[in-house]
Length: 344
Image 1: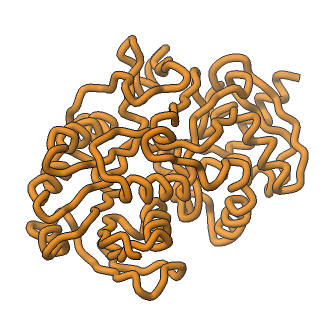
Image 2: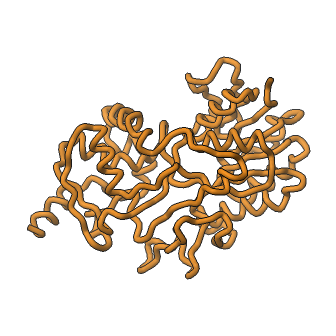
């Protein structure tokens, strides 16, 4: 028996592809929407693809037509997008909207927005519950815009039941900024050593796209107004990630630890954090019966194979724009060698 009709906005991104697959497998009649209208080869033939830009006046209303039982929005980023959905609530049975763990702030007002300031990295509780405080809504940053989006949607809960998913560090196929590249490229380049700051103990809770897809599937089948964290079953340290990737690649690297913060780019990784960032997944388990479909380490063989293939296509900054946008040379081997020589 079919579940009903589902419209997925941002269907060709890394999370959107996984959401479409999960919904189709659960019996939904899925329309996959994106600006380009492309298809994923893994989608069944009965997935309908449509092209439109939600930022064009009237485009979303046209795409909704007479309505859908559930709308899954992967690409909602600010209050205006929230108002766009609530204005069309009469054509949407319920919604599932992806937000971010970047919305939280600690009890001193520190958040991801302050992480580059002296002593600016937030010290959250471990794990962070959904009830924890957030930054104020606004237009100043990614986190403040996501909070503004959330509040628009949650305020309209009676007319548009919405599940907000606060995603952790997303990884998996089609990721434009795969953090795992930091270790995979070093292994492939034959680097015998890696340097990790904060004693390699940094933790930044990952979430595989298939686990987010599972959360989308469960929330679509059980409409309601709620906020849920999105994370993998484990939040490994950066040292544990490095060891796990080495095991997949088949190399054995020496790890050198810095007790404190990175020294320039030396010891800096895409997971580097002065304090752990771990999301509480208890609410998703209780409210939706959520069980992860893949573990972080279990996903690594496919990730390593994909990154190895993509690295062969060109220079890493061109192939992985999501990492290049930070303007950091994550592979400054000369700086590492100089630091190591001085240390010895």
